[in-house]
Image 1: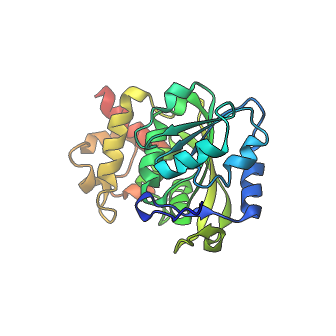
Image 2 (image 1 turned 90 degrees about the vertical axis):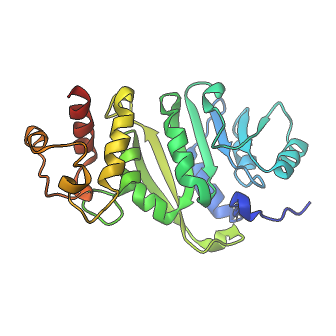
Amino acid sequence: MHHIPRKRFGQNFLIDPRIVTDIIRAVRPAKDDLLVEIGPGLGALTRPLLQTLDHLHVVEIDRDIVERLRREFSEKNLTVHSADALEFDFSVLGGNLRVVGNLPYNISTPILFRLSRFAASISDMHFMLQKEVVARMVAVPSTPDYGRLSVMLQYRFEMEQLFIVSPECFRPAPKVESAVICMVPRRQPLIEASREKLLAEVVSAAFSQRRKTLRNTLQAHLKQEDYLALGIDPGLRAENLSVEQFVMIADHLSKR
């Protein structure tokens, strides 16, 4: 059965066997791993994963693909969760979870933020994403790509871009290059969960107007004496602060 890729689900199916091999090699699945694949599509990664794994979970929103997967694979080997990954409760699968996926580019950032909530029960994640998004995820301070996404993921994960994937490796071919990234949750997040909301508020406010200084963007949060206590120059811009400095600000505000 031929499946027509659906634009509303951001479907770009991986068709290059060499890239599939590279991803499987990066993931290095072990027989008894607890692994979930987000958006299995036509099974480009699902099949090779099942050559090693005893069992695999997949989360798929497209009901036609759900039916197709249930016909092709036995329930003994594959559990198909017919659900939206943005609403799925990954904690029900258990701890030490490994996550893999060729994520739809139109919802990649919300999915990453959603998964970060389950970081405590995840051992690692390997994703195919738009190259520009990966560049922002791993960016360092004082570079053009460094922003809210960089800070909010780096405080919780250690991340590494593994390799670039060209548009011709997909059907239909996207208009942009892609990249595969490995994300490993930090054993000890840089901030306590109770202060995470405050961190998100500070980071969001600081990057709301990139060209303005912290003195302007964080005026609702910090006064001159706060900058002195923190040892941070209010004349800097958000992009000049390290992840640790943003965490320091949130900790300081929490204690105050």
